[in-house]
Amino acid sequence: MPAQVYDIAVIGGGVNGCGIARDAAGRGLKVLLVEQNDLASGTSSMSTKLIHGGLRYLEQYEFKLVRESLIEREILWQMAPHIIQPLRFVLPHSPGLRPAWLIRIGLFLYDHIGGRKLLPASHGLDLTHDPAGKPLKQDVKRGFEYSDCRVDDARLVVLNAMDARAHGADLRPRTRMLSARRTAEHWDIELGPGGSRTPTHVAARILVNAAGPWVGVVADHLADEETQRTPQQRSGVHLVKGSHIVVPRLYDNPRAYIFQTPDGRIVFAIPYQDDYTLIGTTDVDYNDDPGKVCISDDEVRYLCAAISSYFIKQVTPADVIWSFSGLRPLFDEGDVSAKERSRDYVLELDAPQGRPPLLTIFGGKITTYRHLAEDVLRQLTPFLPAAGPPWTRGAVLPGGDFPVDGLARLQHELLDKCPDLGDKTAARLVHAYGTLAADMLGGAGSVADLGRHFGAGLYQREVDYLIANEWAASADDILWRRCKLGLRFSQRETRKLQDYLKTRLAKGSAAPPLQP
Ligand code: FAD
Image 1 (cartoon, rainbow, N blue to C red):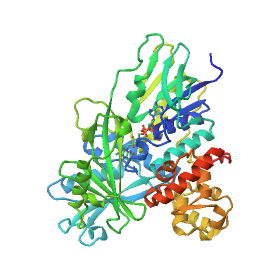
Image 2 (image 1 turned 120 degrees about the vertical axis):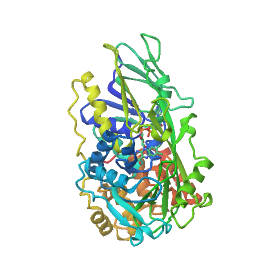
Image 3 (image 1 turned 90 degrees about the vertical axis):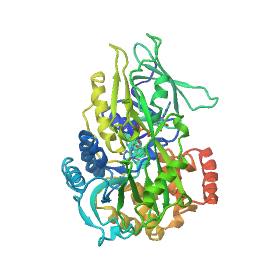
Image 4 (image 1 turned 180 degrees about the vertical axis):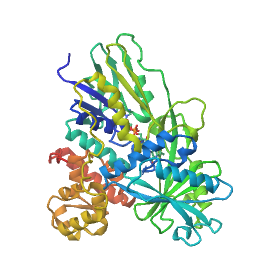
């Protein structure tokens, strides 16, 4: 028996893996999580960034999924009011597509089946007078407005990882599970950072495959010592690609739009980082390497055409300044079209009599990650008699210990401490770090105390904090996942940051992680 045996080893540092690690560690279990790249480098940073019920799923009779998601919406908002905020959606009514009475019924259900308490209800809109109608073509006269929330998806993952660590979990980004073998007592897991370095072995009583789009690849690298076969081949994963484009801001009002398309889908236009509009998404079956997913010219054209059929301002591929694509790792339901496949998650437990269990996750939404983690632990606790009870409902994430309407106050307090930070940077910092923003600044009374300025309000102090506390190790980790400043950084600024990280990481991480 190895010296150290983890209760649970989680493969995958996306929202589901990190949510499970947090929940399990908080129940007193010994948890290991490995992520082959950076945390949230998979699907969990490539989403539409909504905490939502999914109005469209009502049409597919997914009442359970929509209800659970709507319940989670307000739970998550209160757990992390810095990275999750309410957003109003404008749904223009297009004659010839879904009838107004059907939309009204859908919105009535959306308002009522999920225990909405804090978010405002839906209502009809006269788009000939409401400012939301101003950027739209004149034939769009009526519409509806309803509530959902937006989220900084990559930060949600990192905050779960930080909380998991605060509860004693061992998190190892940039560590790949190469293979795992089920012995009579435990899983013998081979880990490697890749390259020529020697792999290490760890042991765990339970293995959780939370590898998202790689769930099938990971399954192929599992073996059972007794049967000499891959232990779990019952279900398959079906990958569906979804892409987004980002263009310069298309309109002034702070609401998002949800547009119906003639092919029965919907496309969102969402205000993004003050100066941009995020447009998405597509649904395309995908059969290639998950690591190579990217947007196609057809998808760009599809999104531009869908948006241009509603907005007066026309969007062309030349307007696209950034795009990203993700893969939905959906449970394989056989011969069903990409847009009709269920977004609900499926958990598959493989626990042969007396042998170490394997739990595999298919599908899911960012919105349901906490609920999914609770479900996973419910299925695993019979094998872990010492595990504590569920605890994450209402337990705030790092930096989220303030009221849902308290962001403006936090921002003022930050500016009182460091007045020359400027409104834009102060707003960005409280949205990213919440109450931890002040700790991150570490008593600085002026930007002169924050060290080198790399660009767009990113100072050395924040970079050092991200290295010490949030596992950041590259310019991409910082610019595209921890801070989302990538769109604002020039190539020269990025190189400056890369040079600094090279020197800084060679010296090692000086500061110990803060205790959230
Ligand atoms: P991932 O985030 O992909 O994490 C899996 C991780 O496993 C990866 O980081 C990968 O590197 C790692 N891994 C793989 N193999 C190994 C290995 N051998 N060793 C170590 N690590 C490994 N949901 C919402 O609620 N709201 C939305 O607005 C929304 N929009 C979406 C838009 C799109 C286009 C897509 C594709 C999905 C969207 N979703 C949305 C769904 C949501 O993003 C996903 O369900 C969720 O992010 C899946 O998380 P995950 O942890 O299962 O997978």
